[in-house]
Length: 535
Image 1: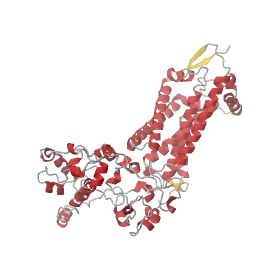
Image 2: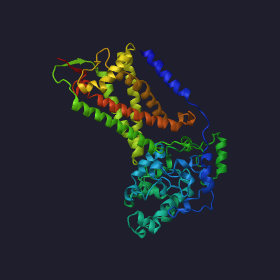
Image 3: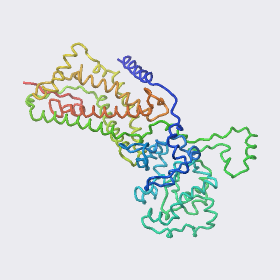
Image 4: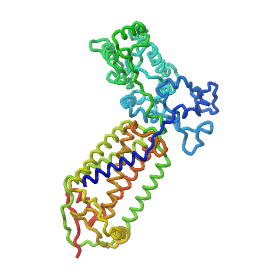
């Protein structure tokens, strides 16, 4: 049995890989070319009064040099369903909010997202008036440094703050009616204010001292005091001696910042044979396909699956009501108990059920909950890894003696299938006995056995494989069956998940088809299978 399982799994993985094809990815420049034809023209004029005209022009040079330079336009800008798409002007687009940013940054920069969600901006400003793009221009922003910013980066960073805080109308709207003059923008209480304001960013004092991302902005009353920067073991010292996780603690990291004589410093570095500094940056390589996690859902597919599942549930409810109304199941007779479900099997069963419950909840949250996206990603990923371990436990149990229940007895299989199908569709309403009873030799009837084989040895492994490929998209082929690889994997994972939900619904319903309504559930708790003796 163990060898058969190993060969089956090897063939499954090998077959999936052999059916997939590899090809060069579509270049971002090609995807963006239709957009550039209009938006790269500095003379572009909007024809809609509800658009901000200044945002219609996008400098392609600045965009290519930005952190999003390798990201296609359609990754963030998508047309509304049922609209004419980008061929019609003005475009009818989906609203761009924090959820679009979080679909990428909620995974790779989860600490930053969490910090922003706890900032005073996110908590005090009315919903919809403040977002990531209030501070960051997605078309032009470059890789900023958490530590050791040069003077230009300091000035640019402070400009983002003063753009709102120094404009009376904007500040009043965002603050709920406060007057702009209520702020001490000159920081008159600060010694050597001019020197501080030219050498420090606003966030150096107004961000939480424990926040390494500098995105958890505190109220003005909770700003950093003098002693936190100028005392022994101060925050200023710590920030100037440590690097953020994505920076390189290597020689030459200060070059090009206007802080030193670069030529002299390069000569010194060459004299000690230090290798050239390597620039680490997010280059968008994972997001050059048409799929981005959490962003490319399909409302039509969601509605289709919802209708299918609802119709499925209605059929089962009708079946159950029919049993309740016209069933003539015997109520007399003695209940016999037979120990059939061992403790390891029961433990595996309930752990598997718990994992699927969490995966279904977190999966729904990834589709329809707009807040705490990165948290739900973590919950879903961790539970998915646990499901992998639990499935390996199932394989171990199968190899250690439980596998014979999944070995199909082919002799007379047609007749058994007909009898079992007839029982569920007709005989169960008449209270007739089950055509096949659970025993130590075979716990499942033929329909259950075939269903469990398909689910546990085909669908669940595919669900795990596609989940791991979404978790580590770098291993996903660029194309599968001539289609974008990540898109295929995403929809395959979604379809498999819905199929598993349908299986769980059937499984729960069949739990009520024992000789007593709770007999099968009790059996999976104490291990005893209960049957009623017939008079």
